[in-house]
Image (cartoon, rainbow, N blue to C red; front, side, top):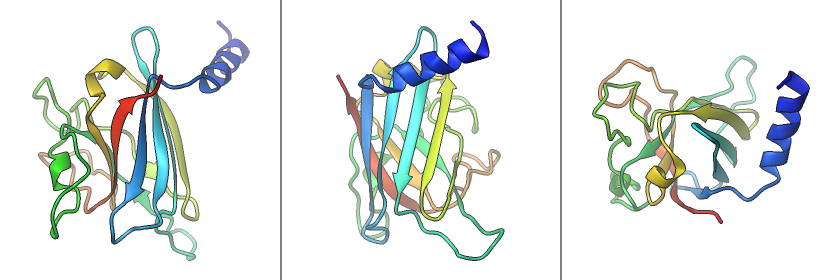
Length: 165
């Protein structure tokens, strides 16, 4: 397949309903955050498409924030006064890998005046394995070294992953 065929195949796939979906909403401290994360099962990989708006941002040049994104093992976007998404639990890590090799460790989101879009493929999980899990957007980018979770800061937003079709 050449580049043009790959691109057209990708665009065609995005017009289909995803196999799984998470509707993301911000915590009480970040009520404007909203968006979705779509999961498309490919042969041996999963295409993940993240689109989020209402993220915090700065008008200063050279200061667009970067946010950590992880799939968590918990099944609820609820928590307590100290951690509004405590029930999302830890990163999804069925193989017991060190960070950043957890199945739930995802690429960061780069903010653009409160909006972020990302599309990537991963072979760390199948869609069926993550349904009923949660996805969290953190206030800081993952540092890809601090154990056990990359020092990604506050949990700003959460969405439960459900079947999409």
